[in-house]
Image 1 (cartoon, rainbow, N blue to C red):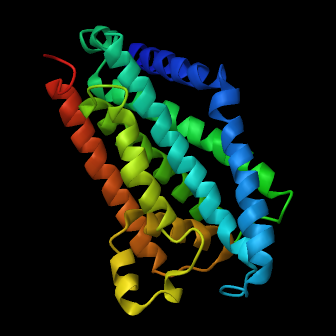
Image 2: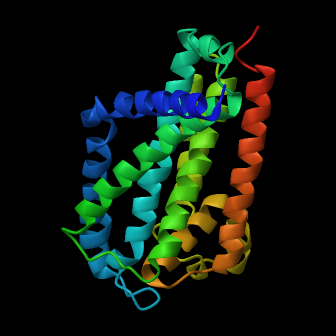
Length: 257
């Protein structure tokens, strides 16, 4: 395939992925906005009003970056895991694999759909947050980099889950038993400085903690860890997961019998 044909193939796959989640926006976008509103009411208003400021910010302001990023993480992951596994289940992913379309473009097409859903939901959640507070804009460039890299990372993670899944039940195991605990323990609702020394060190093993702190730095200018280290960690994870995902796709793992 020449460059123009590759671009057309990628655009077609990406368009399909975007239309897939936008057609059912009531199921893919609206629930995140409603859930976020509940977080702000319960944690931000009811509980947060009883708490002291953290790092110079009200509790409501402090949790906004993490809640926005949590919505992006969950939706980027969910979009790719459900889409690619459905393609496996319906056996039309084989048609793409035997086509002249390079495998890396197939991977980028699915990941791109996950990233765009994450961004759409992130914007919706940010819009909801405006009813409760004014989101910080300390460093917009870092905020955008963190948002995009995180969406890419969890889109790739969703792809890996779909590759190894053998049933629709398998695509819910990782989000329930791995992703949700890591997200909630990643510092969305608290600063790790509030934890005992031992648990602070344990928290450093949680990759989501780096993303949330980098996001918080981009929006508020505060972070529990060095932001440059956090960004390097995210980039490293993205590179490793992309290489591993492409390797599995080239080998046909979970696809070819």
